Structure formats: C-alpha cells, structure tokens
Image (cartoon, rainbow over all chains, first blue to last red; front, side, top):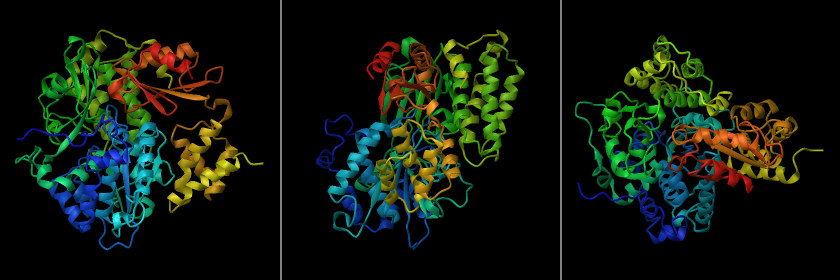
Amino acid sequence: MSKFEPVLLARINKPDSTSLAGYRADGGYEALKKALGMAPDDVTTVVKDAGLRGRGGAGFSAGVKWTFLPKNHPGPIYLCVNADESEPGTFNNRILMEQDPHQLLEGIAIACHAIRSSIAYIYLRYEYGRSYRALDAAIRECYAANLLGKNILGASFNLDVYLHRGAGAYICGEETGLIESLEGKRAWPRIKPPFPAVEGLFRKPTIVNNVETLCCVTHIVSRGADWFKSMGVPPDPKNPRDPGSYGPKLYCISGHVNKPGCVELPLGVTARELIDVHGGGVWKGRKAKAVVPGGISMGFLSADELDTPLDFAGPGRVGCLGLGTAAVVVVDDATSMVDVLYNCCRFMSHESCGQCTPCREGTSWMTRILERIRSGDGQIEDLDLLYEVAASMGIIPGTTICGLSDGAAWPVKNAIKKFRGEFEDYIRSKQKSITPAQELMAAH
Amino acid sequence: MSTLSDELQERIRGEFAKYPDKRAATLPALHLVHDAHRHVSPAAIEEIAELLELHPAEVHDTMSFYNFFKEDAKHGLGRHRVWVCRSISCMLRGGEELLAGLSQRLGTKPGERSADGRVTLEFAECLGACEGAPCMLVDDECHMNLTEDSAAALIEKL
C-alpha cells in the first residue's frame, strides 16, 4: 500500500483553516463544482461504489441509504446532519467542525445535490459553542459567495443550510430521536419502518448523515471511488454480510495514554498501534487493562485483545458490539473495572429517554446494583443478575425501539464476561470505592 | 404585561423562516428565553406557546425532556453556567475530583447556584473534549487539561 496521506485532517491547525479564502486556496469547493456537473444519481453511484459506511456508529452504507429515497418525489427532501456527537470518548466531529467547517459544508452541498434536497439542517449539540461559531461564520461566507442560496455556482441548484442547536440529550444522536427533537418534541426515537428516507423530518423523505461521513463525500467526489477503496479492509470472505471497511477514519484516543488526540488512519489499525504509536503509550509506565474500542456502547477489549483491528468487523469478532465511533478509551491496570463499568452505566441511565421499559428500568437497575457493589454490600450473585438484566434489553434481544439499550447492555456483558474475576475479588474483599466525590455525584 | 420583551419575541419569530412548521422553533425559542431570563417560567412558556401556536403543555413537555432548562426563578441559572464533565475519559483523569473540589470551593452542589448568584455549577455528561480531560464548559467556551486550581482561577475571573 502506498504511503497514507490524511485528507480529513489535512487542514487542521493551519492558520487559516476556518475561512472560505483559506479553504479555496487549498482547492476547496472544486469537488462541489465537479459534482454539480454530474447527474445526481451519478454522484450517489460514486459514493456507493466507494463503499463509504456511516461514521456515526452504525456503519450503514451511505450511498445505499441515499438510494432508499422515493424516486421522482415532488419534495421537499431533507438532509439532517447529525452533529450531536456525544458518545463518551468521541470528539472527532468537533475537531472537523471547529477547524475546517467548509469541508463539512462542501460535503453537505454535494450530498444535497445527490439526494435532490434544497434544505439541510445541522443538528449540533448545544455544548459545541466553538463549532457553532465556526459553522455560523462559514455559512454566512457561503451565502455571500453564492455557495449557498439560489443557483449555486450558476447551476440550477438551490440550497439553504440551517444550524439547529440541541439541548444536551445523548438520544438526539439516534436518527429518529434527532428528527423528533428537530421538530420541537421530546427526542423519543420512532418505531421503524417507516425509515427516515421514506418518512422523516416533517413527514418528508429525509437522509440523516454524520459529520465525518459527509466530509468523506467531498474527497470521494474529488478523488474517486477507487482512491477510497485503496485504503482499509476488504470484505471478510467468510462473512457474506460484511461489505468491507474502506477509506480513512478518524480515531479518537483518550483516557490513560501519554498523548490523547485524534488521528486519521486507514480503517483497520489495531488498538495496540493506536495506543503505542499514536497515543504515546499508556501513561505512568503502566499497562492497559481494558480498552473501549469505539465509545462506551461498544464494550471493552481486554489486554490480550489489543491486536484486534479496528475496522467495522474487528471488534465484533472479540465480543464487542462493533466499531461504533472509533473512539478508543484506555483504562490502565491501576483502575478498578467496577468503577469504569459504574461510570458507563450511570451515563446510560442518565441518557435513556425512558420510552421503552427494558432500557429505562434496565439502565437504572444496573446502575443501582453497581452502586451497591461499590458501597461494599455486593454479593457474587449480583454479577449474574447484572448479566441477566443486560442480556434482556436492546434491539438484539428485540425489546426496544432504538439501539441505546444495546449500547447500555454491552459494556456490562463484556465486563462480566471478560473481567469476572476482578468483580468477584472486589465483592469478596468488601472493597469500597465511594469517595466523597462520588457520594456527591450519587445524589444526582 | 408580557414576560417576553418585544426584542425576544422578535427573535423567536425570526426563527420561523427556517422551518415549515413553527413547532420546530421550540428549542430555539427555549434557548433564547433561557439565556435571557436564566430560567423559563410558566408565564414565559405560555407566551412561547402562543407565538408557536401550540398548547403550553406541549412546550413544557418538550422543555422538561431535556434536563437542560431551569423551570423557576428560585432555581434559575447564575450569571454564568459551569459544566464539569464526569464521563469516562474525564473520570479516568480526575473529572469527578475536579467537580467535587469546585463544588466545595463554591459552596454549591452540582445543579445549584452559588450564594452570590454568580455561578451555577453542573455536572455534564461527555463534553466531547476527551483529548483535554478533565475539561469543563464555561458558558459557551470549553476549557481543557484542568487542575482544581486552574479551574477555580477561571471561575474566579468570571
């Protein structure tokens, strides 16, 4: 393979990375020009041929999703940009939006041309103030330069892009939760079908794409599907349902490493390489005990699973839920897995929308069981109880509307299976880890 | 007399053009009022509902879901809002101790306002700044790689 050249992060940390002038000086909006010279369906075909899979967590083919829109629809068709990044450990989209907002806007414009949409909403999590300011300024620049508005670049293509700020709810990252929230309601995910491509925002056909996914679209149009497919991991011949994992990916590295950060690499790098080469190794000379492969919903890799390639299929082969957001969080060997799991469960219980009983009750009872264990009153049977609750909730046993529940159950299932000995020792020795800080938090 | 100033009403109406349905302006309207009043009172909810052609219960239903908006003046926001992240990457690098320390220094529990009305301290779930853990959001600006002292100094300057 030829030397890997980052494209998504190529402009990050340049002095003029956010302005339109800077973006254009680096060849910006040439891909849009090229796309506008193509028929919309041809743009979709290129994206489909590239094998671009959604970068937000589910990994569904972006091009195929676009083809689910009804043909010859009178419109409007909407694009919703999922910028509600809130999976713990994940910050790649924040970097893209803060530092290179035009890269995203160009991807949005190309996607809207392909799906015949003239309105895009960027659903941005409220906490991303800098992203909001960068995008707001970039959108204004685009209107002034005829890159948004009517007859863009002289073509018969119109597009308005609106920024819509959320209000601190993780569930808005689920695509139909996002749509409900945008419509001004509580963000309760919808029962599917109908999928958003058929009936989405304001009951019209809608495509929801992640920020990084749309940024990839720009580069696929300018460099071609073959370029994209020259990177990554081809389909597993033993798995007919694996479409392969192609292209560059942003990996976030955080937790107990010397050099936390976000790096762009071809899909399929191992967790070990991310930690040792790109994350500067585990801090304080310690060893990794557990590694979150792609946001906490994906579960944990144990220390002997660190050579797992982080492509879409890799984490699943060692019992994790999937690649998720490719946000790697490293836990060192001086940290209790009981505390780590409690943190994951408390997050999910706080963020469960409450609509489905197994998720609402399951997340809260798992948190309470772990609270009891952490106060020194746990029993060995609690571990089986935790596992049973986790195994009874989610789309995978078929008891909930959305995937939040699977994401809440997975860290529990992985932790009990892979670290059971440590949990048993903790309970038997009547260890406690309720510090004053945690006591303060437990009240909430 | 109305609770919402003419200017606020105008800014809420300014949101309508973005959406085919006024109801979609619910969150933008709630943010505008919450920023200005530091809470959204029942009277304000009624006025927002009237502007959006909704029932007040619909606006309240949405608002109460998000756990973001303060509902009464007594528990309203201080002049500044400080969110300290408690999710995994920050927890692993001292986020919970940071929150506890700041809470002690300010004499407030998470979710409450300091006695002088200056600061509301909150815990946050993942702020998406994990490369700079522990981190906190002060109003609209995220600060990374904090110690209790550096965080307290930032709050002191508010």
